Amino acid sequence: MFPLVVNLLSRLIPLWVVVACLNCCPAQADADPVVYVTMVSHFDRPWAMTDGDLVALEKLTRFHPRMRWTHLYNPVAYTQDTPLREAMERFVKQTRDHHAAEIGTHLHMYKSLLTAAGVKFVTHPSVTAEQVEGSRDDSGYAVPITRYSREEIGRLLEHTRKIYQERGLGQPKTFCAGFYATSLDLQNMIAAHGYTTSAAAFPTQTIYGAQYAPSWHALSGWNASVTYKSRPYRISQASILPGHEAPFINAIDKQPLVEIPQTCKIDWMVSAEDMKVIFKEHLAIARQGATTAICLAIHETSSEGNFDKFHQVLRYIDEHIHSGSQPQVKYITTAELRDRILEPN
Image 1 (cartoon, rainbow, N blue to C red):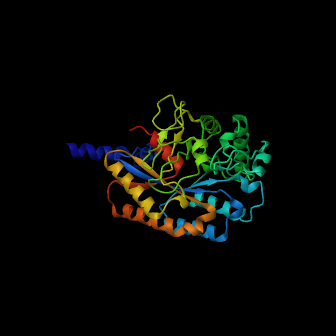
Image 2: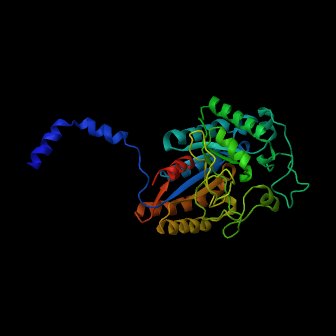
Image 3: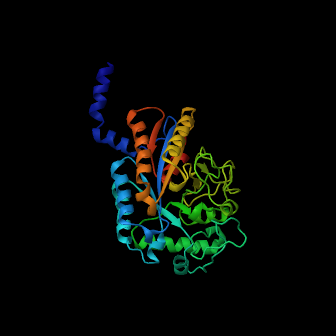
């Protein structure tokens, strides 16, 4: 009798209904702990990028097709002369359109950008000095965004949005200021301007890699609570630091703004071996039952010089993925990682 019922049902339910149901079902959260890997490009001085740097980024894309870029692009490329602007814009768009990359935002406080946004340019303090008092940077590069008011930050974010819209770069979702400087005011402002993800929490220790100057430690907003083992977290209204509870800062989608810790610091600070060890530390975290993530980060202007280092690390990660070993490892953009973190278990 049972085979007869099954046969009858198969005749009554067309195949297209089954397919439609499969397509409309939302993606589920990963059943088992995963180590997510984000790969971030920081556009610090786009006018200084060389053809060799661009080729290096293209090669990393080609050699590691599973890898997903999060490009923290810089609108200063449109406020001062940038020789490779068209080529780098074409690259970030192509990786977005053909390799599922993300285009986010990275802002340094350059005069041309601030002037274009209608913000008064200042040259102090600097995050690259031995002490805060008396420190300055006449280029604005090392002046933290947190030096500016909420209203001024809002102007910068709005000017960035307009540039991205005009250039077909889309609505950015991930934000990171120069030298990772962050504050509650900044986090509230990026959330109000359409961002869902912050990629700024930075390890202050030297267990792996170098560290920034003393003034950075006084001005950045980060402390020893952020480590190479830190996992993504919802940002509290009480503090930018991990370990704080609700209420959280909400993005415009009414879900919490999420912080993605920069576990592997950035290119010049760490060796390939440092990054591999940190990756293995997060494999151990996942084996203990917790989903986690690492972030690899490279500057656009040092891509050629750091190509071998990152090629080696990405190949190491690829080998783990191809081996089928547990825990599972997945490449992901930072904004997509935020969405995974917020998925119900």
